[in-house]
Length: 80
Image (tube, rainbow, N blue to C red; front, side, top):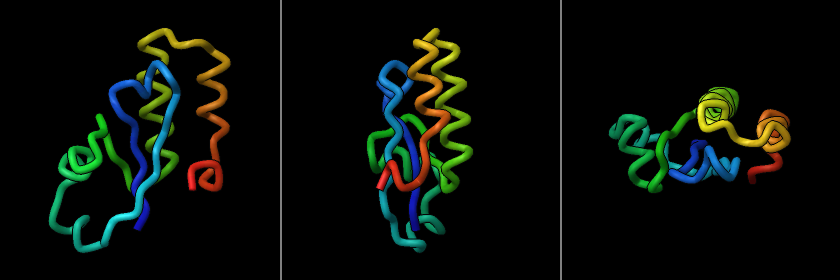
């Protein structure tokens, strides 16, 4: 199963990551545990939710609008 997330620099750099995990890990760990496993600030099973959360952080950090637009346009194939 794919999980998506961003690290501490994600809001500044607009970087979103994708990793594969075993579905049993998802049953065993909460999303917070999955995020810690990859040293991310947050983890999501849905790309749309990950982008939404990252964009919200980027807006709060007053990141460049062009970079925010880039993150909004990301597709799953861009991350794999």
